[in-house]
Amino acid sequence: MDTFTGMLEQMEKMSPSDRQKTMDLARGDCICGDCPTHDACMQVKEELLYCLTAKSACTVVKKACLCPNCPLTPRMGLSHAYYCARGSEKEIRKIV
Image (cartoon, rainbow, N blue to C red):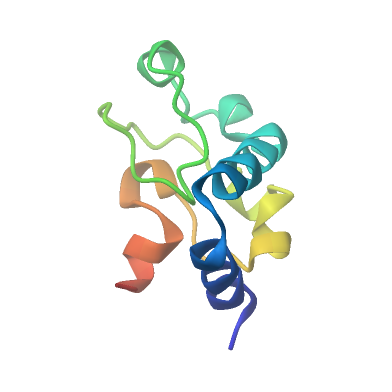
């Protein structure tokens, strides 16, 4: 089992409040807001943490991607980029 799958399994066992605390901690380390692709629409909607949530509701214009350099990438075993345009790691991997 890889790091990401293990993290998903741990989160599924958590209570809703513990899951929210984990997401809040991850949000604090998220660097999406500093990314060149993160635009005004995303800021207004307060979108972050695409790797764990979902792709942006805004139209994404790819400029550059900071995902590979995000501190969450190694910690959570993420292996993709442009989550704002493509969807979460779970969606990209097609994990049900």
